[in-house]
Amino acid sequence: MRHDFSGLWVYLSASPLLGLTLTLIAYLGAWQLHRRTGGHPLVNPVLIAVLVLVGVLWATETPYDTYFDGAQFVHFLLGPATVALAIPLYGQLQRLRAMAIPLGITLLCGAATAIVVAWGAGAVLGASEASLISLAPKSVTTPIAMAVAEALGGLPSLTAALVIMTGIFGAMVAQGLFRLLGTRDPAVQGFAMGLAAHGIGTARAFQISAETGAFAALAMATNGLLTALLTPWLLPWLSRWFA
Image (cartoon, rainbow, N blue to C red):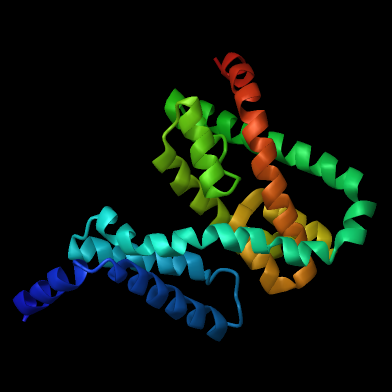
């Protein structure tokens, strides 16, 4: 029976659509579980889907490159999905103008703090220079973070893993932290989630409300740009400070 299954899997794995099919099934199943728990933040559909896919690939000894041949179709859709975030953001244009200065200050402080804290924590724990560089852009969306890490001599694959972990953790703890701090403004909540937890946090913010999601989308986009500019400037200073 196991031999028959192995032969069937070898046959199916030859199709590039296998990765796409596995990804959709894993996420839809995780999403249903998320809904049945009342949208509990600890039952994060992205985390569950990732764990399921890792388990399947490990159990079947399927190389990641084989899986990604099909899953890249989902990866391609990240671009249009990111651009589409401008639509709900446009609906909040009037409030954005009124909050431009405090949002700008928050963005600058948040982006710089994320880089400094990540680098500092890694340095204290004895991480290598390549690992420290990989840690620095962990709070921005994956394509930007990987590009920044690679350009500065980091490890893009490590950065990608750190970015996903950061986003999942932020999406899971954000609402509990807001309740603890007494933060109720949807704009403040959304901007904080997009700033600290990039795309995964933004997806979670849209589950809360359209306004929360719109401000999260703004923070995610602007933080990606600012982090790409700040990181090369901050790292030499951080290297000297933590030397």
